[in-house]
Length: 316
Image 1: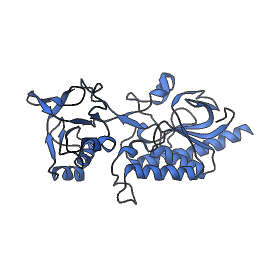
Image 2: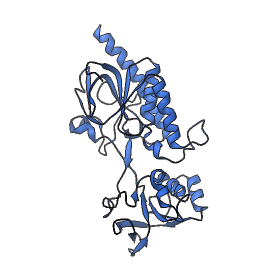
Image 3: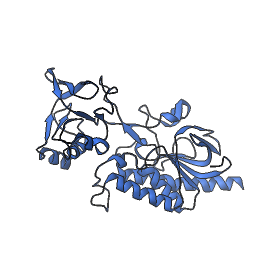
């Protein structure tokens, strides 16, 4: 990676939004690099089953991620594995992306770093992470064969991954702070029909405990105030997501982030900084799904291409 090389588009993040942006930008004959710190696919790559992607009845998340990755690569996207440390000269014509692999120059940037699971914030969570505390059923479920597990949350991810865990566990208890799930009805119906799933309503986890591994959780009923202990071999936490935007820092963040750290854009995926676009789960939006992420990525790449055209006209 030469420091003298100038990219038309640098995409930060290799989830569905980033890979779609790469695909569209690559097909438009732009010089594109995509920087991803881990496995491509983002949250899709750790989702067991995707059933709501149009044209595909059912596909494993990792499988869909790899198809997207290879397709983007086919159209000339340069795949760079590394960590983005910061962005410099963001208001200038040529922007600098500083990575763990060196400095890159680009005319435009598409921010698609995605989001990551929120921490529950309960005592014992950090200490027992990887020792029974997990945020990825697809990654860790097989380690709990014939064990009893707890899932914390009540949205789509909690219920869907709880169902998945019954493939391995002898029993899965979903602990939810409200008296009904927020998950889609089809997922709720599947959970209620699964005889391995138990639900504790109106309940919160106050702490996670165990001797070098998860053995129990302390719980509290939000209506009665009653407390107690619940034995378990593992705790899978799904209490929401937070955007991976801290690398932007205060100077850039103050211009393009909302109060919760999500990136603000218009319908063209433009941020308040010219030449900087955003797409996917990192963006302030009403829905965060693979299909919406890919849509964002396509729009961001289209308008990044327009920006590059104007950029080049200004140089003439």
